[in-house]
Length: 134
Image 1 (cartoon, rainbow, N blue to C red):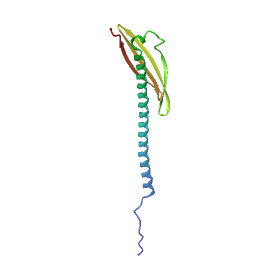
Image 2 (cartoon, rainbow, N blue to C red; image 1 turned 30 degrees about the vertical axis):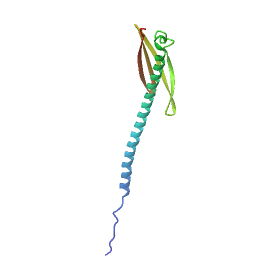
Image 3 (cartoon, one colour; image 1 turned 90 degrees about the horizontal axis):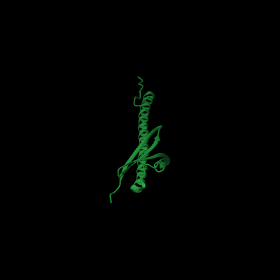
Image 4 (cartoon, rainbow, N blue to C red; image 1 turned 180 degrees about the vertical axis):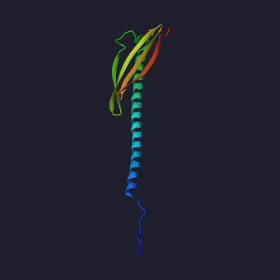
């Protein structure tokens, strides 16, 4: 009697292809998660820079003191663009300054706006200067 010994200890081609498909689906899901994390991180860095721009512009206004800030003068309160380097690229921020006068106080409003992935975002800063009675 001749006995033929079958070797059943390997993978068939179908099993190998199915395992490759399962691995590819898992890797594509992982790559999508990495892509989302990178996008969210970039968006947060752009927003943090907008906060820094608003803070710097507000500090400039507050440094002028009560008498240096004139909310009624439109030549002082205007819109302009500020460029900042973020992630080895330059991002433009639009800065608008407005204000209002009250009895013995002046309000300064700064709005920083920017575009990211076809959407417009804004960051606002506001402060009040009061006249000291000396």
